[in-house]
Image 1 (cartoon, rainbow, N blue to C red):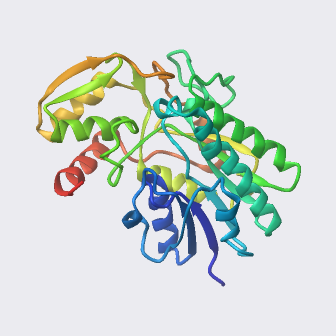
Image 2: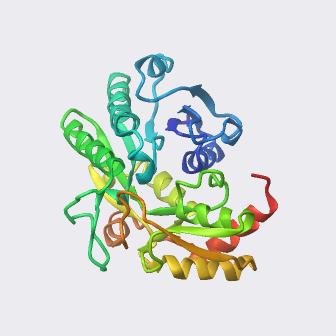
Amino acid sequence: MAAKSYLVTGAAGFIGAAIARCLLQERSEVWTIDNLSTGFAESIPAGVKFIQGNCQDAEVIARLGDKRFDAILHIAGQSSGEISFDDPSYDLRTNTEATLRLIKFGLEHGCSRFIYASTMSVYGDVPETPIPETWEPRPLSFYGVGKLASEHYLRIYQSKGLRPTALRFFNVYGPFQNMKNLRQGMVSIFLAQLIKHDKVAVKGALDRFRDFIYIDDVVESVVSIIDKPETFGGVFNIASGKKTTVGELLSLMKKQSGIDKEIVIAPGTPGDQRGIQADVSLARKVFGFEAKWTLERGLAEMIRWAKSTTW
């Protein structure tokens, strides 16, 4: 059987690199487009064919030539609600226009399978109950608005032959997360400060809550659905289904790292959700998804990596 070929955008970043690495282990051919705005060239797994640039730029997409992929896995994009307020136009281009460019390329070059990295940020303010995919989205950030718009574009293009799946990632964490970016990734932000700073600045109240999911579980969710027709046209929460407050997260990180530093509460950020927990029953029912990593085990692995790595 001939090796399959995939375009994984954002393979210089945390999630994209992990997905690309998994596909390479399956002896697939992997290409990527990445602008290195938050990722690192050295993070791109060896063997990946790399095009540097923005996915929203037509001339960058043109560098793919007439390459035909078995699937496009669109992971790249600006991925911080806070940062989206700095330049909403850039956020729209990198998260929505880029999606349109890639859909067009795929359909014009015989690739109808499209997996999209969406986000929990599409939901906005929600009650303290597990939130299903049927919940009416009311995003609070420009980032969430752009991601939701892309989901709608996928839905409309399905009538034109696209076979899309949108995965709404919740708070992803794990080894190789960007520890230098203190405006993106709650676990990496807190851990970086815990290890290298005098204090840990928390933007918002300690009773805020999130649903944390380990990187390996995210990668498995993406790779496992590539060839599953039952996921075509679907939108799925990818999370642990467990609720953890910011205070609980910090206590666990202190305990497992053996580092105890002062916690300083700072004002919250624009568009921040007070709390969200996923209902993952749809993903479980449709494609057997189940998060295998507990927060305790995942944090222990990430802390070991962070303490033993130069970053």
